[in-house]
Image (cartoon, rainbow, N blue to C red; front, top):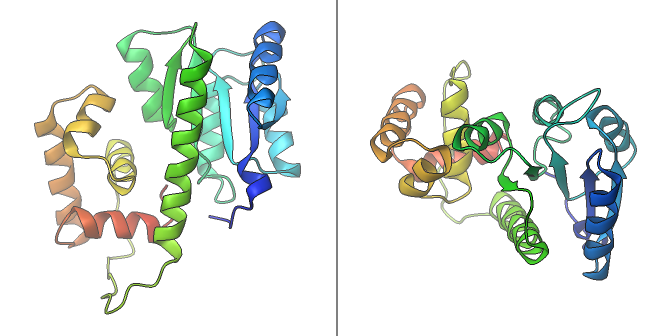
Length: 215
């Protein structure tokens, strides 16, 4: 995760094929002090990311050429961009749509139409979370014991999502609500990951996830 300057913290990438929505959201966010770069679809957005990294991505789901799911997968698979917080804006509001969006790699899933103030609140919360994770990653801890985990640990896609949320400081109950599963299911995933990694608790799982750039 790069060291974010104040200017970079204000730079957002907005991806949507609806020009009216882009204009409205861009104007509103710029009035709130953000610099907004736009793209019409995922393919165009990937070209933008090659030139300049924002501090957060706001992305539609249904778009021509490359949809939001495919785009976010590419973002998460690239070590240079995998840390970027992603906020989905979508007209698809069913529970399964939300679950699919979060499982794909989005950090936040908002349904259109939305309140602009809520969008700003979600952006600010995501940026603060990223800053906290950066501080936690960079701050030396006196007497800290190094974590040794087998190099060939194989986590399932669901386990990867759970450990990312654990590393973000979410409780099992919050993770269960976000993924629309039972708390017992989340506890089972955490237990399985502790067994696979040989770690002792959720705190060590979170540290390992941060050290391995899983978030």
